[in-house]
Image (cartoon, rainbow, N blue to C red; front, top):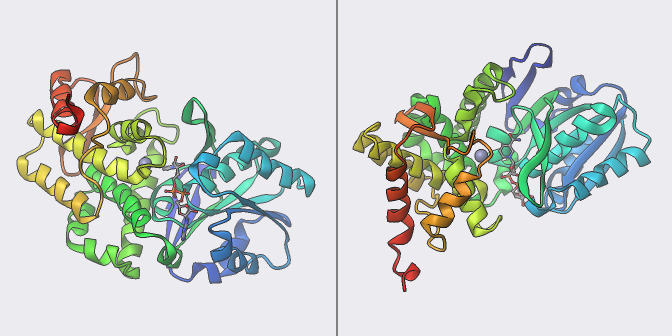
Length: 366
Ligand SMILES: NC(=O)c1ccc[n+]([C@@H]2O[C@H](COP(=O)([O-])OP(=O)(O)OC[C@H]3O[C@@H](n4cnc5c(N)ncnc54)[C@H](O)[C@@H]3O)[C@@H](O)[C@H]2O)c1
Ligand SMILES: [Zn+2]
């Protein structure tokens, strides 16, 4: 097992990473205050890991909430089911919520913990690769609104994160690749050594080699924890974590949520960001090719959906919440591991890129 620390003063917390962690109650107990614990999970994960999790909680006053599975349930209505359970059990401010699941469960549970009685403890037990390397770390919580994804939420840091790599064995291949996209992202943002390691070890990761997964998760959490420690509320450097996300968000919105997985859209979006950077001569052809290759090696889609056209794509990018005063802001590259935030790129090159990717498809014409 590896343990990292997210350094946020009084809100600092450990991240434990490794196999068999769901067999070790000692990781959990120090972070539970009082006796009241509510485990929040969904109907896919409950049959797989709920019993094992409850076995860690013997002696506590434990409730469980099993939510329906899916991003479409990341809503205020579903959040209310968590509050119902907390209130029906008369849980007090000293209760602890445990999120057992992927990013959807983590985000809902974290927001429930941020707002129940103005804030209670919570613990993340992330069970997808994406949640283990990204969503469980950093304290962003929330739900979607019909008019926008993640529009209602709060910053609320967990007491600890327990990433049991054994849980990844039941994850389907597409979900695994989607998580790899966020790992590749850390390499591109500021960790060229991780990127080079991924180029050598992608086969091991795809075959779910436990040591390889542990290493990749650890490095990713370390990179994310450093960025979060430097800029918890995203007023500066934390925005780098959005590499590939403005393009990716356009794909997710344009195709309808759920058609592309978030990580798939981000993978393709990172390649588009690299291509735009190359068009500006900010990265070399070799660096662009390395980026394309790693996306392909991770079995992620690398061309945007041909059902979209460039006008639609640009329209969605223009309303992205990261934009300040209507200028599109993008995370772009000056090298592998050298990212920067810019609204000062050449719009004509962006337009050319989108035209070449989206409007040259014969199916679009006529
Ligand atoms: N808070 C943040 O900083 C942050 C960062 C990135 C993403 N997110 C959010 O995370 C969500 C995406 O997370 P995700 O990719 O984990 O999706 P998810 O939570 O929907 O999980 C993906 C699927 O895998 C299933 N699953 C989970 N663990 C499993 C396991 N061990 N075995 C088998 N199946 C399993 C889930 O039930 C679901 O069907 C989005 O809502 C996104 O907005 C949040
Ligand atoms: Zn993401």
